[in-house]
Image (cartoon, rainbow over all chains, first blue to last red; front, top):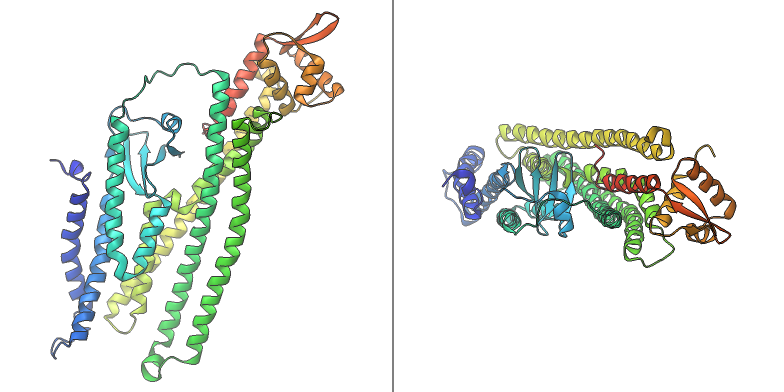
Length: 393
Length: 89
């Protein structure tokens, strides 16, 4: 059996991750903690327990990292007759079309990204799935659960790809769609966009909250490093408690402000979704579908930009990588002074890489949003041409 | 009229699209939800572009969508459909 085919099996991905992760963790453990724990004297049960737990945590992170690479990085060939985004939307699947690719939500935690140019796809977690992985990997004792969860995501993606490919497809010849059907289709799609925009708004609150929590953790790590020499001699100084309280208060206040702002923005998108739903269902006979759609067209670039700006939904793999780098870096920094200096240096490099990757993604998202706005202006000129018959003819 | 409002033109086209028979001006006015003077201006503008024709019937002036009017409506709906699917890149 070829390796690409084997990558479709959850057990293969899990076994490879474990097979590489366990010895790598052993080597890393020996390299990093080798001098930290003196083996000359007797190993007390508490030292043994600490060594085992450190090894398991380190192994968990390495296994999760390898499993993430095996699950999200490779592109696989989609079978012949794989449906396009329009067909999938008509079949009721949640689909987001991107530049050159489209995402299909196949489960609560799994999505498939199909690249139209080369007919390949990738397995990715949804923003909810990513959140679950991130939260699990924040606590070292839970990192192994994140690994099993990722394996589950991989399996769900592959099963869905097969289901979608094997489904008996209707005749692919698209007949000329009637005007009424086109209007209904536009309303359906716009409704889906508005509803997804509300979801993205909710998710962006999580993005911002996560950034805030990460920076708070970094600030606390710095505080820990600064107070470490004093803590070892005389116990934590008063300013350590004050600083911790100030960091916690700032984080909580920030999250509350973000939540209030997010609620307002979500309500706006939900209002749009409700309006489109009423038009679709014909609840209010006085509403003109074409007028609602023309209004909705003005919102489309904003809704599309939202998808592209949402860090989680945009590049889940890279976001997860940057987060892992930042967490690993800040965790390493917290060990400052207690283990080998090279490990501290390595942690600084990891942290810098994580922050750089995250910043680069944010800048790229913003640039793309600007490009989209410019393209949208050109599109609007096309709308004006309906009023100038000389140009139309 | 220098620059008509696309929304009003679209609503007129939308109302006339579904009618197989010529439509009374007063009925069209109610359906579009505008006042008679504004509707008259728009109808004159649209007739000038060949989108509609006026038909005298039983002493009433009725409005009928021309083939070009139907084509314009079709194009507008297709444009909206492409736009909401993000096909403008």
